[in-house]
Length: 164
Image 1 (cartoon, rainbow, N blue to C red):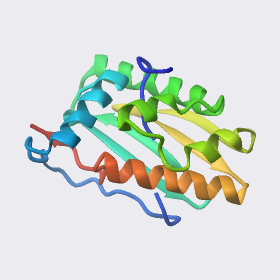
Image 2: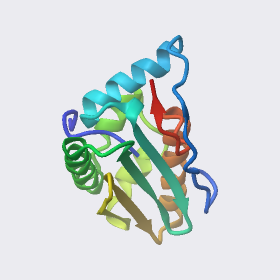
Image 3: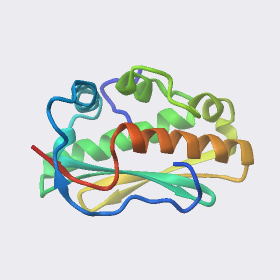
């Protein structure tokens, strides 16, 4: 399992999350708080002070994780995590998202089976990084979009930075 290295990962081509900022979700939501705790353990950064994006694109999608403020150590940790995610996903290993979500993530099984038809490319961003996912295989594309949609929903990743 890729627990220490991290976890991450929409439906409908072109869907994206916007960059608005909001307050943290209520702390009484224990399922979300547990997800955030597992995410912090897997990714190495506070989930409430980081921004997730899971964007569908016509040829795949992108997973983005950035710190909400200048934090060189956190940025380095995110970049290491996303490099590891790109390598793991390319090898068909989706154990980190399964750990964070405590279940198999929709689309991951097909993405693993069609790993030779999917490309994962890491790129630095100012406060973190992104993994760009591309494919020409329609079955893989559908799986990528299902994977991203689940991530977007479960992480409440509408582009907001959650600050407690």
